[in-house]
Amino acid sequence: MKLHRRRWLAIAALAPVLARAQGDVNAQLRDAAQRNDLAAFRALVAAGADVNARDAQQDSAFLIAARSGHTEVVRAALAAGADVKALNRYGSTAVFGPAYRGHVETVRLLLQSPIDLHHVNSLGWTALLEAIVLGQDGPAHQEIVRLLVARGSDVHKADREGVTALQHAQRRGQAEVVRMLRAAGAR
Image 1 (cartoon, rainbow, N blue to C red):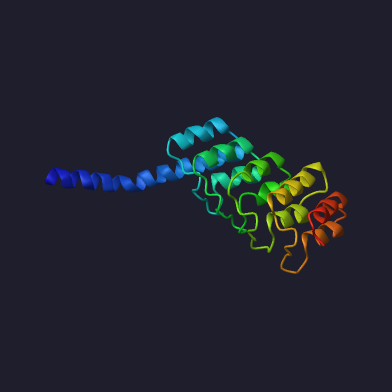
Image 2 (spheres, rainbow, N blue to C red; image 1 turned 30 degrees about the vertical axis):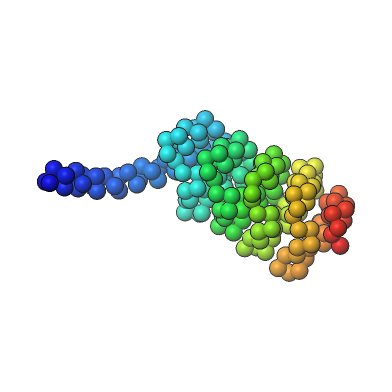
């Protein structure tokens, strides 16, 4: 009985150390995601790191990799159980960051998952609105808009001020995006 109690006390004393070590491995995983270090990312996941563990800014390794356009790390995170419903500090899902930053392949990959295209973040935008408002009128953003529309993003959804994707694209002089939105039925 005394030996069992001593073991329990020894394990209990190690709990904070183990928790810190787990926190360290999760921080290392987020760092590997930021650096696009796929080998380190996979090794850390195999060692028990959690792709959904958050830092103080509410970023997980999955959200960081997606925002950064690290497609293969995103693929590994999805395979490791990344939560596609996870939101960052702006209330955005993982598809928002690569959509506005022009990371076509990452958007393409995320659109193969059950990610919510109709989600509205704390700024009042969907991923489509964010891609248009914060994106550039180049080939990458045009392809992202095309992908989002093809997947069923709501072309009629307006932001908090009542401005639609079409109106934003017109205001920004994004002629090709305007054409795509009109072809999808936006008015």
